[in-house]
Length: 205
Image (cartoon, rainbow, N blue to C red; front, side):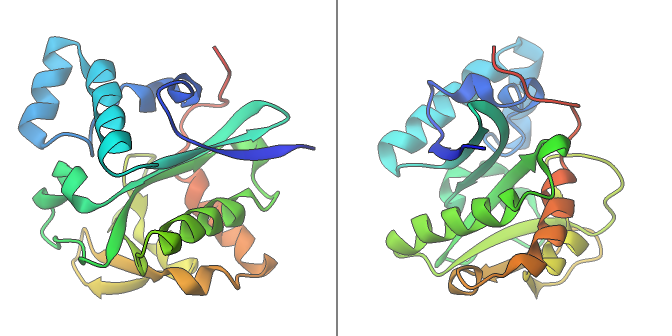
């Protein structure tokens, strides 16, 4: 089984699930996001966002391939590039951290250690770029797949609450701790990354 984690670019953007290619929940502020959906341009806005972040900051995601089939992805960026983050009651993200926006693994490929590989790959990338941590807004009342990751799943893989809130706590993971993760973390990561999976499979176009 050959597996690759490839930086997200405009070329492999089509390998993300369709609902994610046309989702601008994080990439635009709430007003602009609604306007984009009404105008029918969210996919164009997504492309523009990724292009701008790549040019100004660099890689902002990874796509996971197993035997050339896209089976998962992760999106992350400094909060300055994530307008929606400012609308959360527990913002802002700490200046030494990057925001974990969303991530997912296809159900058929959970339990293979891909979650740990994804997070450790992101950690190595961000440590090289001088960041100390990754932070996320968790959903403490999570009930169904959404753009927000469930807070209890984030806590299960080592995130710590830095700003509590009954609905949207802000959580933090020190990047260096991820590099020593063992296999016992994999089950919790599978639950975390599987929690945003809505489609039964990702298929190349």
